[in-house]
Length: 278
Figure 1 (cartoon, rainbow, N blue to C red):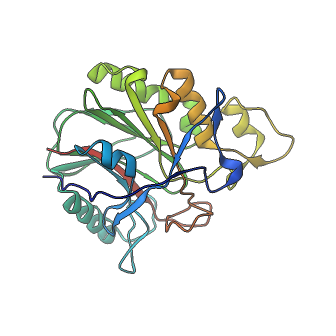
Figure 2 (cartoon, rainbow, N blue to C red):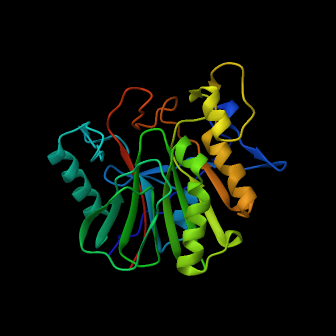
């Protein structure tokens, strides 16, 4: 069984980076500081922990007791043996029966999971997962990209998506919403969305081609872009209520959150996970 996370106090605040505050339709989206649960489980959304006791959700940090806690099966950071051991540690800490992950390619392919074999299951070339089965932990790995968590509390259907700028431009969020609708009947208005720890809008400088791909005003020179802000706009356009959206305060670059950052030269990856408790 998945263990119940400890009940914690929480704070709601504006993003640490002032330039990263997200406004949409004259509404400021709620910013959340995920709290540290344990070395193995990492950071968890404190509001969801309190509101959804049937949910297991979190994002690992980069070290456990001084040892590197790297989940990058395909990034070439740590040895294959140590990475596999880290996956086993997380699986054991959550108490899940099985965990699903994919070879992420910055695309829009999403797998739905009714039943899954015990242990860690790796799927080819995908960037998202959907389930309503208890004991199945969905996961994506990141090191600056945005992990997107989607929850339909009424139907107890969930999804996790991996969103870099290419995936966002290709429509990963819309594909995730569609996959939930086809799988469980979820409508956008029913969904809660959390944009987890990633690089913030002040730290992610990109060229004009990224702004163009994301249909944002094109600057004259390389400039910072807020991927979580872009995703919030897209979620609003897709019909997810802004009051149902939260955004992590944690930045992989500028906050002391003990997270891997590709921009900072890290080859390691943290894993964002979500599952239904049996």
